[in-house]
Image (cartoon, rainbow, N blue to C red; front, top):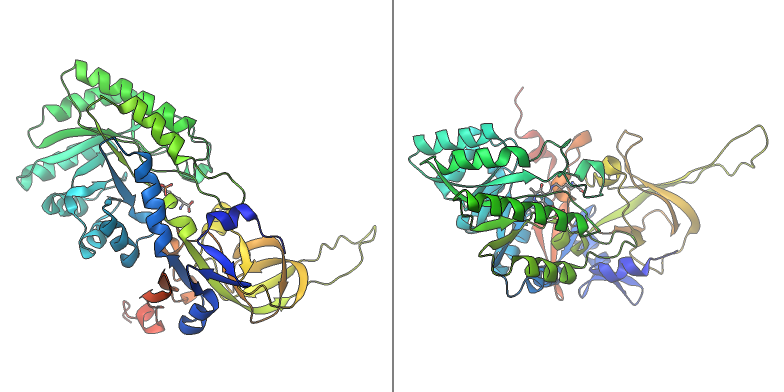
Length: 433
Ligand code: LLP
């Protein structure tokens, strides 16, 4: 079995005497106690990633708004609130999660292209820090609702800087062809409208160009464009106090070098020093991806036929390991062909070494977690899907009427259940005949 040292270095999971563990807790112990599939997170790694980012920005006034969509489990959000993070939300549902963990609404930015009237009203009544506005129509709606509710809505315009984040097309958001943000050419006119509106308080400028970004250059390019706009606005008498550069910092899934937040931070500091702007960032994946894993158990092995290849037959036999986690638990491989490491929980487990496809029980050929992995497997083995702390549980569903997985938070030598496995009763309880 080949274990990529980069991946093990980046992940919270590590082998102790041949047993995969998070912090000081053996993952097998968690699987025995809670069952599988189960998401397991490292509290220490959440904190370490948070400190890495805030330390990179030390000396510059800044606020980290944790992007709730990456992992919105309450216990995870609570930890970031306790660390001092604000939150980046994209729905009223996410706002109610912030409130449920005692997060400060005055440290919440609200992004997203489709904010509904109900969501805008909820945010206005709650008193959030800022709406990151994505269109002229949305600005008009926010102004109308503020007027009706006798509030003043704090806003930033989310600019689409038309830079290529060089990432997967589904998670690239800063190109003109993407639905996000306001074109630079329209921004000045919209800012002038907003400034003249008594129901709007113009605070800042924002962008978010994509996710899983490896090369920082597109982020710097976007920053320069925003700064040019800040200067133009100043000359028109509009003085901004906040600049929001979004999230997107890439992580190691396989052997990608980790995004160098320290180098990025020092360049950002250089560009923003003496500007009088407070920096905001909206990281999600960077804080959570490698702090989490998904544990799953092998149900069945389906080794392929070992038929010899001749001139007439074209049998490339596939070996399938059917596990108890599926695309409803972790959608990223199916949706983005994303690569996640898969490691045996016990290095002592015996089995035939083959190149296995790790697949779930769902009735879709797209239901796979990993392909062509050299592993020694027996039925009943526990496997660990790596780097599953971001966009894992949040993207999960009940497809095939499968209850969503349990979630566990590890802290040192202790672990606790932070989301119980859904029951079949939970699943049926919202419906009526
Ligand atoms: N801010 C905004 C406005 C966003 O749209 C996003 C992510 C973030 C911040 C956080 O980005 P991060 O730091 O996590 O890269 N489901 C995909 C990722 C979708 C990202 C959507 N927006 C995946 O599993 O790769």
